[in-house]
Amino acid sequence: MRAFIFPGQGSQSVGMGKALADASPYAREVFQEVDEALGQNLFRLMAEGPAEELTLTENAQPAIMANAIATLRVLEREGGVSLADKADFVAGHSLGEYSALCAAGTFDLATTARLLKLRGQAMQAAVPVGVGAMAALLGADLEKAEAIAAAAIEAVRAETGETLVCAVANDNDPSQVVISGHKEAIDRAVALAKDHGAKRALPLPVSAPFHCSLMQSAAEAMEKALAEARIAAPLVPLYCNVDAAPVGAVDAIRTGLVRQVTGMVRWRESVLAMHEAGVSDFVEFGGKVLGPMVKRIAPDAAPLSVVTMDDIEALLKTL
Image 1 (cartoon, rainbow, N blue to C red):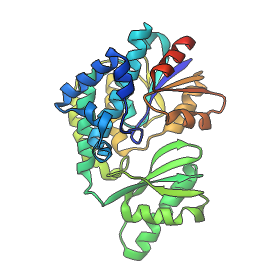
Image 2 (image 1 turned 60 degrees about the vertical axis):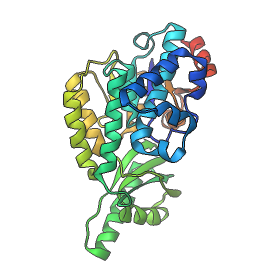
Image 3 (image 1 turned 90 degrees about the vertical axis):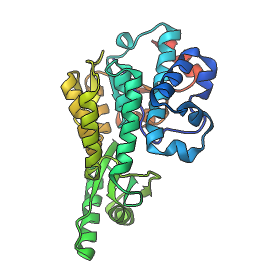
Image 4 (image 1 turned 45 degrees about the horizontal axis):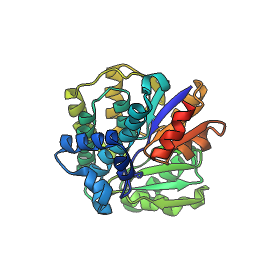
């Protein structure tokens, strides 16, 4: 069995999509449609930068999706294959869940682009710049990460009397967990991490604390937008971030996307659940981030990351 998977924030880089657009009219079509939906020249920003502007979450989110969908579209159109025939499930990491749903026909491309632009704007607006932060804990599993977060909250409370937010945002794989919350608590967690058995703690270059309770106003904005968006049942089930379980009903998808804004991305559990359901082949579109995670979660799985025309041609031979 096979799952098509889609990366999240952090997989953006200047130059993304350019070689694919040069090589295929189908990729150019995707980028053009996204530009028109957003009323901005996002593709030029992807191709030429500047990096600071591309990294802004309201640009990075639709850009990562557009790049992934362009890669899939080239595979489908030039290879004459369809997702419904070649994939048993789809899944995506955080914003990648929107890419996965676009791929599976739940949202059309223009709707997906507009939803992700809004998601980025709402997440940025939820917390003033500098108030929130995120950090990756390396060499830590979920249990260790939760202990580090709790110790950080306690240490700040003991000193200031304030109860700040510090929570697990992404359970990525057995050796990498990301925490999110108030900057003061995250800084404290980074300082405490080694004492609690983590190898390293790295503050992440993000502009907002995603996937924690500080994102409540963004969750409300997405709830309103998703209530108005046209949503169809996906061609294949989606393994949803917040439940690490397959969903196909429109209401469950909508609810999952709202909960995901403040909830933990249960990526490790999602991959395990897909693997246990019989998925051995994981094909990542538009990035090289999830493939290595899959390998660490399920060592006998076969992940493949597809970014270039050569990658697409190699994949076609195996389908």
